Amino acid sequence: MFESNSFFKSVKNAFQFLVKKEGRALLLCFSIAIIFWFFHSLNDTHTANLKIPVQYNYTQANVVPLRPPPEKITLNVTGIGWGIFTRSLGIKQNKLEVDLPKPTEVKAISVKSILPDISEVVKEFTLNFVIEDSLKFEYDSIVEKPIEIYLDSSNFKLKQSYIVEGSIQLFPDKIKSRGPSKILSEITDKITLKLEASGVDRDFEKTIEIPNSNKDWVEFFPSSVKVLVNVIKMLTIRKNVEPVIKNIPKKVNLNKLKIFPELAYVKFELLETQKDLGDSIKVILDFDEFNENDSTICPKYIAPSELQEVVILPGHFKVSY
Image 1 (cartoon, helix red, strand yellow):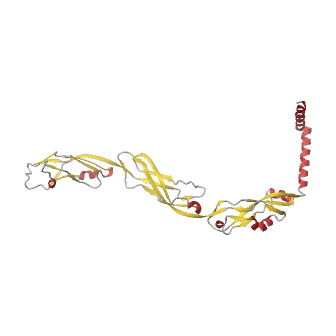
Image 2: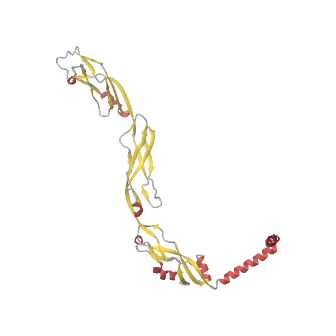
Image 3: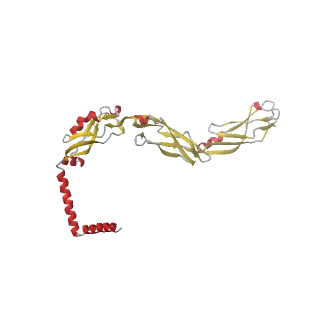
């Protein structure tokens, strides 16, 4: 225990000496000596690993690397220390240029096949060996693919008494995708977008982004679509209408002819903008359909096609004459 305490005490004393003025001077001299020794050693021959940047040249258009080739290659070289030192700092750093005439058809390049080019890049050194045995990569062609856009409006809810006038419009309903052919081949050519809203009581417009799970590789043109919905209110009309009697037989005394009830109760729906059409509905009692068993006629109606959900009450009119 005593010896251990003495050791730590000696270290503490040495540290306190170094932080004093005399100690700082000694530390400076020591640092200068190391620097001189380091630069002197650079005049000697050394062996080291150097990382050389690689530039890949190809003329084929619309090509993208799915798996990029290595940006640097590691060489074991022997040479003067100054040269190795400057190279390691990136000074006078020549690039290794590798030609790829058909990048989409090749997956790797053997280092042996480009040894002459490598030796030329580090010609001031002796090339001992290359760490990598090959340069691996994967390129793919950029292509375009059409995609059809569909809309799921099952969760698009209108306020009561409102309807969609016409149909829901989608602009555009076809887009283009652009990206590597390998990735586009795995993407569907149909995309369904969900339109969700509730309590809608006016014209509706919304921009929906096209979902893209491959943003790093695939682009959509355009990247969004616009949805337009024309919404209109439906009116519920209730009114009493005097029936029109047709095909009255000659034997019927018109003065004694009576129907019960005298008025028909009519209910129907139509667009708010077409409410004037409600006056054109007619209730018809046709004697050709007179039921002699109970002396009734089942009513019919004539109305524009714009009138919907038409109801005539009662279902049978009592006739006497």
